[in-house]
Length: 298
Image 1: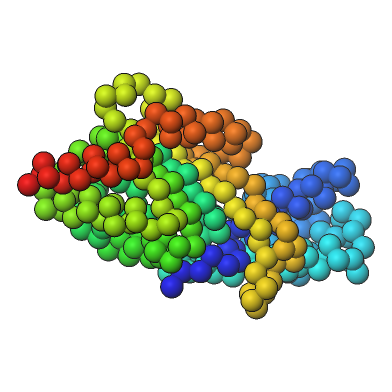
Image 2: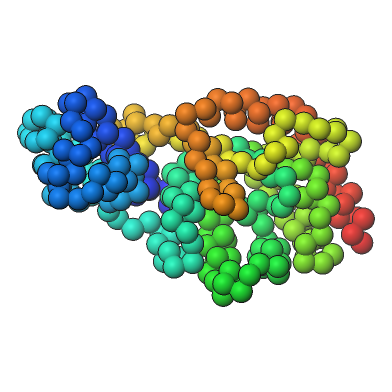
């Protein structure tokens, strides 16, 4: 069972943002901090971006550099975030098969409460059957094939939060992804039937963008808009220091030359997604189109 509580990725990113704000407010340069820690300035930048773990013992030095009272509640909060950020996420067992940027995405997804996803070419991994997922590896390079089973297991495990109704998901799919037969007709029929099944879940909405609609905003590429709720869970053995904290929205764009995380202009993507929803068939009509495609496949 996959739990969303206390994603170390989110904790590291939050800690880094607070350390960056404290550094800027104290008018301390990155070079000064790097010298105090005997590391390169790039290491400090990576800490502030949440890409490098901050040890709990380092918090005292950060507090001293930034003029923060050692006995303050802020130091206690930062220490807690550093401790939780150093933990291993459930996906760590797949670390040898995925890139660091993708691991960051999984860590964010594990904490998100709602995903708004546009897919233009292929069924989303959170909604794939195992057979369909296996077929997506048919034309990848040998290195990717070597890690295929682990990557598929990771994909199946990620689906747990959808099945357990912990994650709200609104997926707009281009008709091309519905009609593109991947793995042969039997695999594709099974995949489309699976879409009908998951669409019955109260936390999942599926809409299809029809070919007949012509051009529409968002055609340039798929993206995932991630939203996060308050981080407090009173039953968590390591509760969130500030239960009212909400991680900022993040847009994830997967690319051949690198993954992109957009955090400054997320409102633009929210607008694009709303336009896609308007341009798409209604959920009811979308499922009817999927049924017709199942019949066409025979």
